[in-house]
Length: 145
Image 1: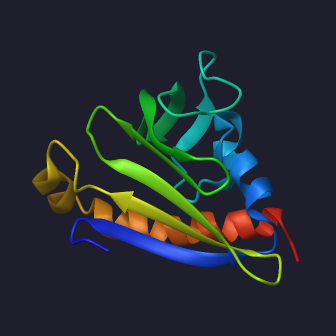
Image 2: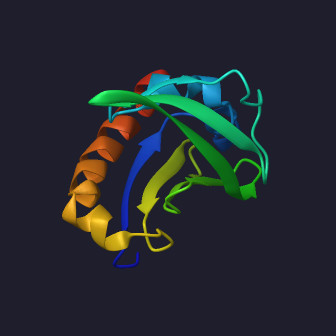
């Protein structure tokens, strides 16, 4: 993991295909968001993401706002990542285990951000690490063993 990345992992009691289906559907993102900022997908969002797909989200961090994302990494049932205008990425890596579960790793990667200093000074790495832990717990709760 690079110095401008924060990752957390958890085992989820579901195969990668089921988890990926949820991650590739922007309308489902508010269900797993542990940050409390993701409210809803915007009407222009595709039903299923793919490489290069653009999707908008309704957000709230203090005040409501909208954000446009682009899928920049995509490997069916294994990897998906998106970024928005600031350049940082949210990446999900799914690795199947022998017992039918999946190790899910979510990464906040600001190595590609336009203003990494601002991200660090505003405390986003620490806050996002905490939110990732909550997100992974919510994701795990959607697939109880």
